[in-house]
Image (cartoon, rainbow, N blue to C red; front, side):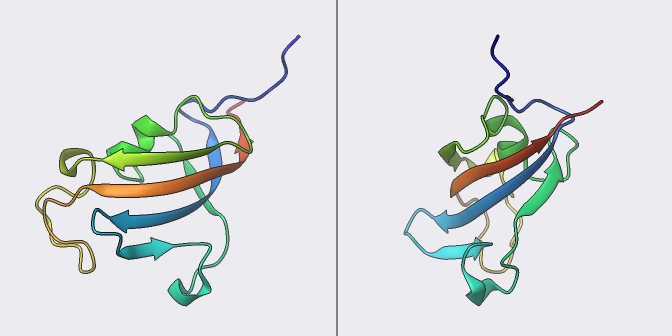
Length: 104
């Protein structure tokens, strides 16, 4: 019997991540203390609380798995100016799934 957890919509995920632009500029990270929030990031998968590229790209991950998500603008922030993220940017996230708290 396989008891390994796989992420699905509705699960609360605990993640480490670093976000970069295509030119390599890091715009956010929870593993770099310079960004001021060096703790795991938690959110409910599929609840629309993160960009669509995360809600879609993190389904099916296993605890401990690392993945690179390349997110086109339409699944990221689109044509909005997000400060460190220019409009119509493709985003590259290095993510690591630390924990899954499944829905009951």
